[in-house]
Structures are given as structure tokens and as C-alpha cells.
Amino acid sequence: MLLSGASVLANYTNSPLWQRRATGLLSSAASNFFTPFPNASNIMYEPACEKATACNNDQLSFKAYLARWMAASTQMAPYTTEAVMKLLRPSALAAVGACSGGSDNRTCGTKWYVGGWDGTSGIGQQLAALEVVQGLLVNSIEPPAVASGVRISLATATSTVILPTGMPTPKDENGKPASSTGIPGQIQNGMSWFAWVEYR
Image (cartoon, rainbow, N blue to C red; front, side, top):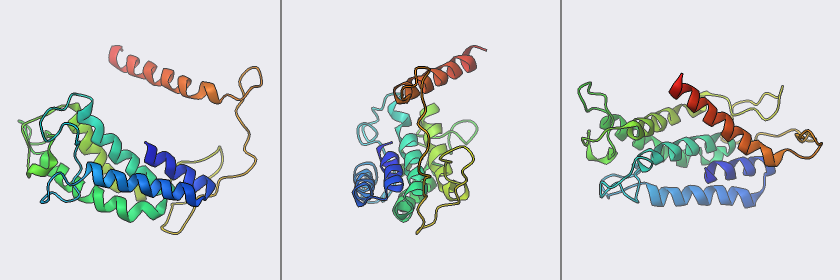
């Protein structure tokens, strides 16, 4: 998430400071969350628990979020694309190989670097594999829009998305900036959706 946020800020500000932060976060992710063993180069793993087979339900899905935000960063900071894809491609290939278990021969496992299904299963494993594979499709969709009615073309290795100046700041009912209410409102909407799906 930090990588994606830094990429958005690098794009918005066109500042070398934010560009360095984005590439620094990507380098840190590459050195900490990839290549669990010398013979498993550039394959994603969860270092806190995966090699010891000690991941809890939350940790089993962490690779999904990392893959999603890495892919998203390539749209806002196109200069990260080559480095991101060097990590996502082998991880996706390994994840597909790990999704060969269970009675349906499509159940995904946790350890992508073992050359097949590792005997584990769950929503975290399925989500992680889905995200890393669909992350490879990021360049086939348009970057997120920045304002109503503003269309952004696909990012290329040399392009920068230019945000319009003078965008109005959302206000609450008292005319104050609504920045403090945006995130809680989104969380509330998200939780309502989860409740609706679970109990309908």
C-alpha cells in the first residue's frame, strides 16, 4: 500500500523525492518478500511465517495485497514497470503451479516455490494466486480516473499522468474540508457491503 501511495504522490508532484521513495519501497519489497531460497528467484513469499508453515489466516492473504499494490504502482509510476514485472511474472507462474491441488486439481497452496501444490488451502491462498496473476494484466486497463469527466490515457514508460489544477476540495455540511470523513465513510460502506453479502 505504501508503494502504491508513493507512486501516486510521485505522479502527482513529479517530485524526485517521491520518485526515490517509490523506487526505494519497491527495492525493499523485492529484497524482503521475494526469493525465499536461491533456487526460487523472484518468487513471492511471506517471510514472517511461510517457510515455517506458521501463517495465520490473515498472513495467508498478504501476498495478494502486495501483488495488487505493486501492479497498481506501475500505472502511476511507469518507470517501476520493468522491476515490478520481473517479480510478478515468476511469482504468477509459480502460483499457477501451486494451484493444482485438491479434488478439483485447482486448489491453490501457500508455498509457490515448491513446484506444485503444498497440501494447504483456503481463501487466502486463492486470493493471493488470483491477485498475482491478474496483476500481469494491469497494462491492459486504464489508470484510475482523477476527477469526474477527466479521462487518462494508458501510462507508458515515459508518460506522466497530469492532474488538473484547481480541483475543488470536498466540503462537509458545515463547509469544512471533508478529508477527515472520507476514510471512515469508505470503511463504513465497505463493512455494510460485507454484512449484506454475508447475511442476505
